[in-house]
Image (cartoon, rainbow, N blue to C red; front, side):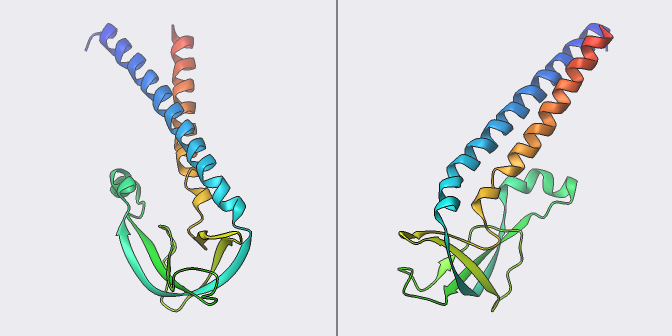
Amino acid sequence: MSRRRISWLSVIAVILFLVAGSFLLIMGCVVFMINKPLTDGCTAVTYGVVVSVDRVVDKSREGIATSRGVKLYRYVAKIEPEDKSIFNSSTLTSGMSDHTYEKGERVEIHYDPSNPSSHYVQYANPSTDGIIYVVYGAILLFAGIVALVVRKIKS
């Protein structure tokens, strides 16, 4: 390969790192801001018992699962609240979680007292959803900036 072609490839790689890192960083912040009102409003806590657990494939992890040892599966639990008068349903469903729920396990249910349909289950806190995007975005952005600085120093 010619030196000029390698130079262009490195420029494209730096641009891709910077764009992808910025995109993931912004996306993570947006996801975090969207979920923040839910977690801020859920000030009351009650308990429930896990009645069933489903193992689901997390499509967002398929690309990295085999190469990085990341768990491809996540878990969704159906929970029966101890105080059934709070919710309109006899069972609630958790969000996806890395936690392996066990049938019969007692878990916390965080809910908004003024709007109990707004709730989340222990181990499936939606405020953590954006963190992975922020972390990967920061890593890519940092790698892009380092590559840009190294490129400037070499030229």
